[in-house]
Structure formats: structure tokens, C-alpha cells
Image (cartoon, rainbow, N blue to C red; front, side, top):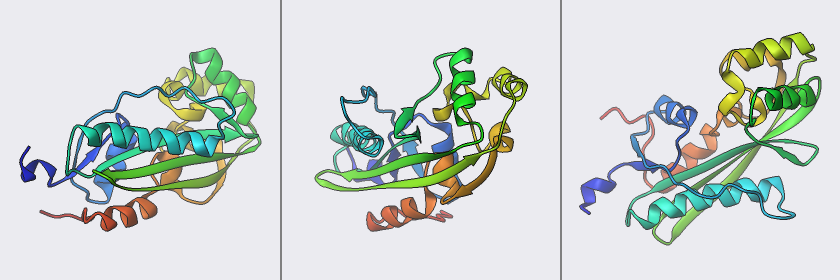
Length: 197
């Protein structure tokens, strides 16, 4: 592998939201998806879970790309210390949204950067306050199809924006990548932001 192959960041994620967020801050990158087991371990806390997955994704891709900087990330929605993953189907999406309605939950995103033996990791937590929702509102939102591939069954950056009454913390974290913290970590690895070249 030539040095030119490592001239940009590798994003170890299939998430279109993470791609859009990195593009938003001018980071040049390529995507190499890491396929890892995302099953929570017994008695694993939500924060430990997202941290393990983010680091695992980055390490798996970094192992195949020596000398390259790899970014792994994972986001989960947490209510009462329970992980609310992506819904299995429409009925599950309705169940999750009904549980979140009118309550405050946490969105946890872990970000890991790995280059060979060097690694840096951070987890950011945002408090999200959901509006009170009727069963009809929930059913109508689920019918849009947007909840299908999203942790917590909603997308704050899309049609689901109207479900959120308020947030306390990083907005981009809820979308899938806390940009202020990620940019600082990237600069530690000499990956530029606002790259015009």
C-alpha cells in the first residue's frame, strides 16, 4: 500500500448521516464498512456498548489499512438505561416511539480513531426531550418509512424533527457524529477539516 492511499481518513461506517456530517465540515475520506457483531454483552452498560462497537469497527478496518487513520462510530438511544436499537419492523417502531413520547432520553455516540497502535476514543451524550405524541401521529410517522434504519426509530435531521421538543447538548451527536469533538480528535491525527483542496 502506498502512502498516497492513506492521505485521507477512512470512515468505518455505512451510515449516510456520518458521511454527510463529515462532508459538512470539509473532511476528505473514503468509506470501508466494518462488519462486526453488534449484540450487546451481558450486563454491558449503554456507554460501554457504543464505545466497544466504535473501537471495534475502527480496529477492524485499521488492521487491513496499516498507517491509515480510521474513524469508527456507533450511536444508540437510551431510555432508563436500556438500549433502544433500530426497530425490527413497523410494529416495533411504533412501540419504541410510544415509549419515548413525552419523555427525555439520551443519545450516546462513541467516536474512535485508530492508526496502527495509536487510538483515541470519546463518547458524547445528548439529552433529547420528546413531545407528547398521539397514536395517530406515531402511526403516520412510521408510515413514512423513516424510522426503519434509525436507532430509537426516529431521525432528528429528517421528518422526525417535529417529534423533538428540545435537546440539551450536541445536535450533530443525535444525527450520528458529534462534530466539535470529532473535529478535535481528527486534528490530533493531522486530518484537516475545512479542506478546500
